[in-house]
Image (cartoon, rainbow, N blue to C red; front, top):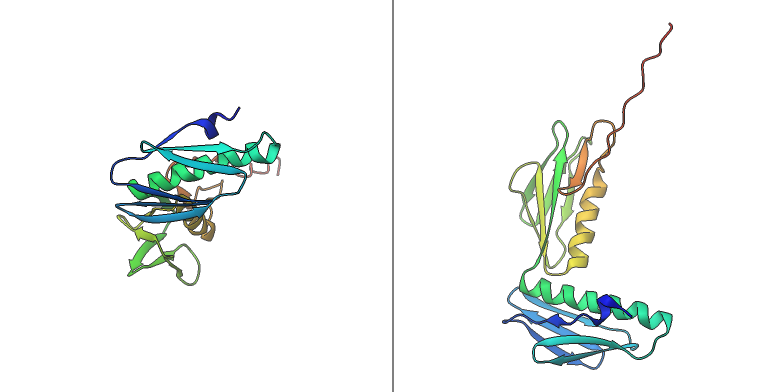
Length: 181
């Protein structure tokens, strides 16, 4: 019994959903997303409620049931509200700047690192040490934020690097001084 897969998805006002066989298209005030679901699951729209059902109780079908429902819920949330991922930079001289749709990072390398915003993603730099990634596709927002973090991941000794705003860095003690010399 899939708790996630059986949960209904309420479609908010202003969001339209079209189910065409295995393809589901969701359009809202922020944009439009489309996804083709596996044939083991079926989607039904009734009274502005989306329900995902599976055709049998095989292991693969049960796994795809919950996954498909979560993907659809993220699509509905994305076109209605959008998704945001915030990153913080820690380190002397670490800063970010926005030039059009290109994010420029100064993170201790001999050169600035430039990242171009993919389609559907926008960058914001409210402070020189804060980066905000926005978009309607949760998967793409998370992927772009991970690529930014990968430029200079946080290190455990001084805590320098790029981290998510809700990420906790486990700090380590440095080398103990050599005693007895």
